[in-house]
Length: 312
Image (tube, rainbow, N blue to C red; front, side, top):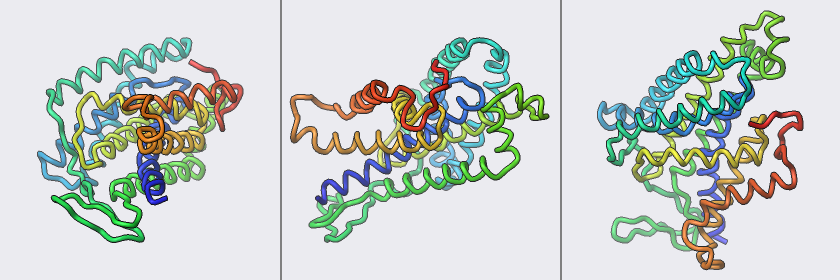
């Protein structure tokens, strides 16, 4: 039971980061109808900026993450104005292909910036853990937990930070005038324009929010007591099964999908080597896509998605 609870806690921490990335996809998709495949590259650029600010400039992790969110958010706005705004009126598939090209270009930039060297982000939690209901042990510098549930502090921090940010975003979208205008734009752009809403401005805001959330996810990606490389941008692709499971146009579905994927991966990593070793190593990376296929067969529009959504 202790192993199960510890695995669930790890899965919730990891799933909260997936939820953050999934929400960044959904925010842009709902406002513009574009599935932005460049989000993984924005995530890894957020990791790089956080690393530079924390390790080379000596800034605290929180300040470094905020700086990364600001810079990547501004970069996202620039991308929207230069590459995506001219695609208005074109088929969504065309705009999606543009984002694929952006992903490749930004990933090349990320590889140049990382220069094949792993980086850290000034993780304040490292591998520190708490032991619930047991006794903390230490052997050769490694902290363990005897007879209790070991929960890593970075998992707690990831879960709390991600859900607080998503909760504040949801509150702002439902209570502010800009949030109301963004929701009106997502429902019907022509009607919103007729009511005096600056649709172009809403596009820029949605891309800024999406880029900032991806950057925060990148900062939290490195906050697990290890190092990050440019290839870890592929980490964000796991958010695609999450938003398909939850519903492509649903913020609530994105959060639920992210948590489901995180928990499923953590449980698979814990128990699959014991009960199904014939599936091979790293099978937990396959699980999100199996879940996505099952959901698509049973509920093609996801758990909270709408039937009218146009798939890219």
